[in-house]
Image (cartoon, rainbow, N blue to C red; front, side):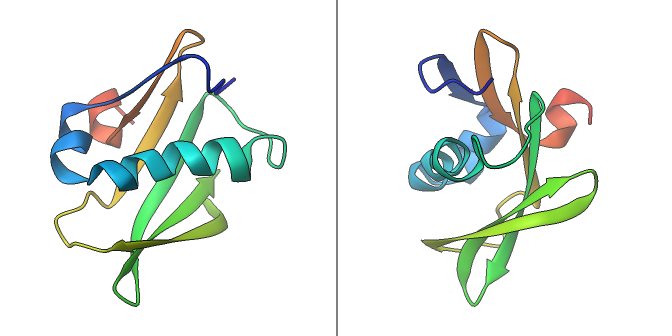
Length: 102
């Protein structure tokens, strides 16, 4: 699951609200910080939070905060409050929860 060699996408709402580097950072976190560390289902949730003016990603499992990953990217209030990453087995997509009916 979440194989970096599979096709990866971001929804229109994600692409239109987050900078490319912030989107790429989601894949980096999954590949380098979550894989083989946490048990992952095919749906991962992150809350996007303002951490002293920079974007941080709160990794949420079962409605509980599991880990926070800081980034060097500036936070913007126009960012979605949360995002999900879904792995269908063939493709992976970053989207807002409302886009995949969560």
